[in-house]
Image 1 (tube, rainbow, N blue to C red):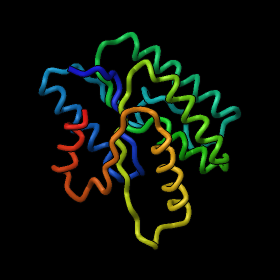
Image 2: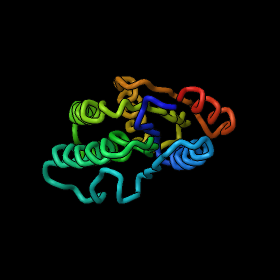
Image 3: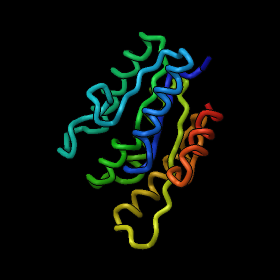
Image 4: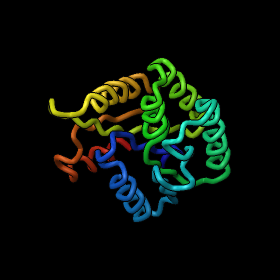
Length: 175
């Protein structure tokens, strides 16, 4: 049914990533698609324990993603994953004071690494008003730029929570 082995759901915290992974997991299973759902906080998600800073963070994250790739290449199911290189990995790097170029570099390396899975990206872009803390404004700008630079087939849904039915129709149509 799908040429892709990985669907990545990206967006800020609270944008609807978890709900969408659950929705797609159920939607795909109802259509007899073998699927694995991976949430940001699950043990099978490539990440380190946050917020503790680790030496050689980017290199260690690439090792985690390499392990993930090998695991996903051994199975034939479709993986729907909440967050990947952007959320929470790039967010943590941003919090730790890494330069934007360092964040972009790691995201590019993760993309290259997981490209054999033929991933697609669904990005929930949330537009905030002027009262948002500076960190979230800065992080949103960086997050949007990472999406713009992403080379995978991708879909951006602005303010997805405004109409979940329409959002899910866009997502399914894109897939």
